[in-house]
Length: 239
Image (tube, rainbow, N blue to C red; front, side, top):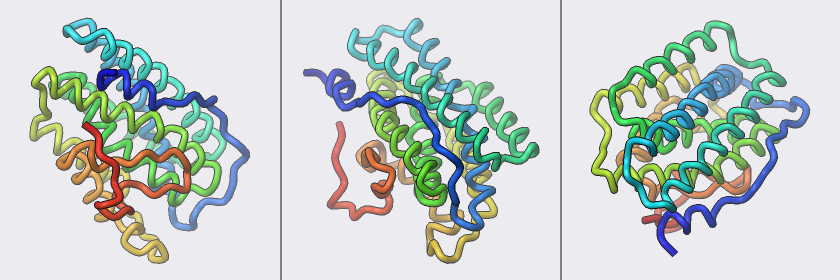
């Protein structure tokens, strides 16, 4: 079984659903609203992947992974859209800023696959633990469902980029950090300790990108800690 087939086998099926609005952590409305606003980037990843496999020669199993991942991204967009509609946490101003960030990612000249793996490794895997930690039960469940898919996506897209000899530019790295910086700007939840401050999440994003997929942990359950909440010797290893 090759790497890509192994990754496909890790996936599980789930149906997009969002329960009734439940309490979130006090003081987290802004970061949660911005996290949901950035769902706009999910479908862009799907478009980039669709564009990428027509321009490159990839193993059949890698193409199968990309096709499966595109369907996942559509499902993620659907369930996050449900959550955004039910929770109504995003301000009009933040929606507009998210659209501007979205356009910056579209316009960036790096290869589509590179943009996809940078987003998934170091932006989405900051958004998802934020939803789990501060979003209460319903958003935590959604985070857990999506995390199972994204752990596969991050590994697959990083591997494909590596196989094709592609890497990210310093300008894409800055865009990634600016995106996360906007996401967590203003986060002040003293009861959450370090996790209630922006720097914790900026550091997490840096680690995800610079140290690679070996620092990811599957979040199959909404209550399972994110990679940076677990001791290094307890982390799984991916290729």
